Image (tube, rainbow, N blue to C red):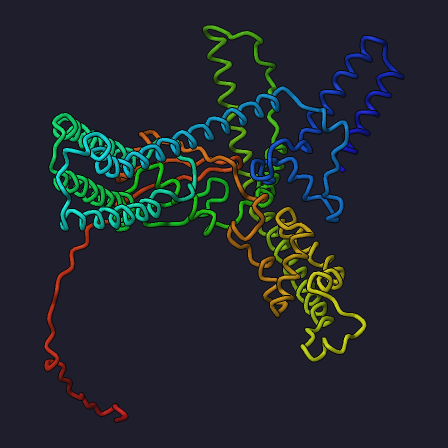
Length: 537
């Protein structure tokens, strides 16, 4: 609908310019109308995938959605005008996003390739140690006895255990893309590489060059390599998993727009991994970001500031910077004007709290009224449906509906009340008609009460409760004054920036707690009854 109104505005300006101006002015107005049309139609152009462009990112779109009265009108119709109306900023942004995505994909695949190559080198090295003597000098080898053959079984089972352990620890789906390399994982990879290379050097100098005939010793050498790799894997578990389990820091996470705050306990983590843990907890614990709730205070402040005017009764300021006494006079006049502005704002502030009080009281009254109507409408709608028992289904009555059809049948009776309540509480952009019907069908399927159905709309839930297209940000930016690979420290502060807001994180070390013990003898609990003249006992 936004594109249609844009197109009509374009036609109006074009017709007016053709009818009332000369050729030069007509071309300039036509160019202005085109640029205006292009800038307005940017809101309805969708180039990236849905996860890449959150719907909460455009404040102008939110401002228009607040004024929508019906869900059907919020559907964006992409016309020919909106498809081809791209500004230079859009092209630059799209190009940058594509370059970033290509860079992230290349880095992820490169690290995965290195991990696979290193893993193959680790697992094939013991087998190569056992196979090369049979391939290069089989006639010189001594007969492998019973103890030597038992070592083959040991190598096979140890390699199987190592394979499963490496798969469980390292080959997992990545949760996120970090800006820097994980230091401990890189150190472990370098350690394994140096360890395998040193074993190959020793094998080449002492066994390949001399063509050692003691095959049992070669097998024991391969077994020692597998044992050492198992110990390195244990070291990886300690560094990557166990080290961060004990809480060491308490971090305070504050959302910059509305000040919502949460506290978390984290272990010995680097700044980038602490940021990843905070983002995961943010999606679970923080309520969904709603910029529509912030527009009321901004409009109120703008209205108050718009009512203040400053008049210069002595004349205008000089056009060019003055020197000497003129500069001092202009500076003094500016100070007097700023003082007059502050005094007027203070007098206005004395009465603005009354306006705020009555506005909030009126808003709360409207919310309670809409809520009461919504509760009644939903309860009445739920009374019109009844779950059929298995015996009743065999009778094949006339009107039998599945949960989806039942939800569509009772939804119109509650749609208007629900829509008004969502508009009053400024949540209409968080719930689409399709998502509400799906939730209604889910509640009907699982025999949930009307109160359970309304809980998702009466109480704002965590961010993950809503659709991914409503909150998912493609990329977070970590802003820190120190290196993101360094560990958390006392007083460390960093920011996690998203499109609409940022999370300000402050770290405090958990203090050392000293506990003392005091023993009380159970036999020391003796009491006496004190009787007085006024006592009722």
